Amino acid sequence: MKIVVQKFGGTSVATPEGRAKAVERIISAREQGFQPVVVVSAMGRKGEPYATDTLIDLVKNIHTDVAPREMDLLISCGEVISTVVMATALRNRGYRAVALTGAQAGIRTDGNHGNARIMEIDPEYINRHLAQDRIVIVAGFQGICEDGSVTTLGRGGSDTTATALGAALQAEYVEIYTDVDGVMTIDPRLVPDAAIMKDISYREICEMANQGAKVIHPRAVEAAMSGKIPIKIKNTFSDAEGTLIAEHVAERVITGLAHLSDITQVKVGPLDGGDVQMAKVKVLKTMAEARISIDMTGVAPNSIFFIIKGEDTGRAKAALQKAGYNTTVDPGCAKVSVIGAGMEGVPGVMADIMESLDKAGITVLQTSDSDITISFLIKESDLSKAIQILHDDIELGKI
Image (cartoon, helix red, strand yellow):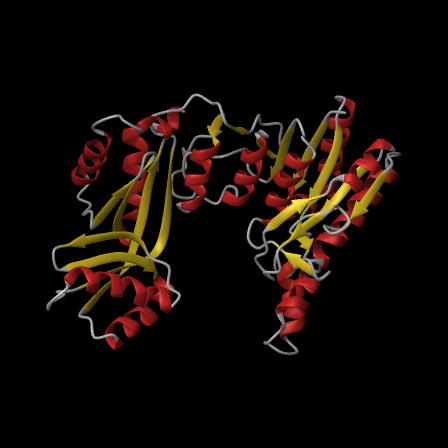
C-alpha cells in the first residue's frame, strides 16, 4: 500500500476553483497508484466566513477573554468544515471519501492549548479506512489531549499534521500544496528575480524558517525528518515542479537568504563592580523572568548585547532599568541570514558577505554564525538594498 499525504492550505480550498484543482491533484495521485491521505486547512483568510480569524472575531466580539480550551474548540471548526466539503467534492466525482477530525485520525497531543505538540499518532483508524479503499480527509492543525479536550497546534499546524501523519503512516512522501511554485531563494517581494529551488535539505529549510522565511514551519520539517519522509512543496494552481525537501540533496555553499524585521538591539553596560561575569548572567535572567526571547547574544569585557523583537522593546528596557542596569536600545533594525549547508568549513564566506555590504555602504551592527548560517544585524532602512546586493553577488538567481 503506497501512501502519499497531500496537504492543501487555506488558499487552495477557499474557492470552488481552488477546491476543484485540489480534487484533481488527489485523483491524479490515485491514478498513479497511491492511496491519498489528505490534510486540509480552514477555508480562506480573515474576513471570509469559515476562516480561523473570522471565528476568533465572532467570539471576541462577545468578550475578549476567551478560555484557551474553548478557543481551541472553536478554531478547530474551520478545518473540520473543510474536511466535509472536500470529502463531499470527491464523492461527487465518484470516489469513496471519509472526513476525520484530528482526534478521529489518532492525533494525540500535550495539553498546551493554542500551541500543542503532537505526542503520538495511532494510525489504526486511518489504515482501516484505507483498507476499505477510501480517500481519508483529515482536519489539520488539531488533535486531542489526555483529558479528551480538542487542542490546536499553533502556527504551521496543518503542515505539521501532514508531515507527522506521513511519518506515522510511512508514506512515500508528503506533498504540501500552496499558492507559490516552491521554496524561493529569498522573499520575491524584496527581490523580483528570486529563484525557485529544485531541492533543499531538511536542516537548511529548518534554518531558513527559523530565520524568518515563511515557507514551512520547523516543527513540520522535524516530523518529516524523524521518519525520513521527503516533502514536496508544490503549487495547487500550476504544474511547476516545486521544491523537494529531503535528507540527501546536493548541498550548496549558499542556498538562500532569510530576514526578520522590526528588531531592536539592546546593549547593557558598562557593568561595573565586583563580579562582572555574574552581572552578565543576571542580565540574561532578567530577560528570562520577563519572558523575553533574545538572540545574537554577544559579550564584551564589561558589557553584554543582544537583539529582541521590536514589540518587546518597552518591556525589556523597563525590566533592565528596574534591575539597575545602564541600558541602550536601538530599534528599527533587521536581521539578515545567509544559509547554506555547504558553507561548513569553507573559509572566506563571512569576508565576502562583509565586503558586499561595505561596498553598498551598509553598516553591520552585529554578527553571529553557526555551521550553516551567517547572520548580521543592520538598520531596517538598509534591508532591501542589503538583500538585493547579496542576492546578486552570491548569484542566487542562477540556482
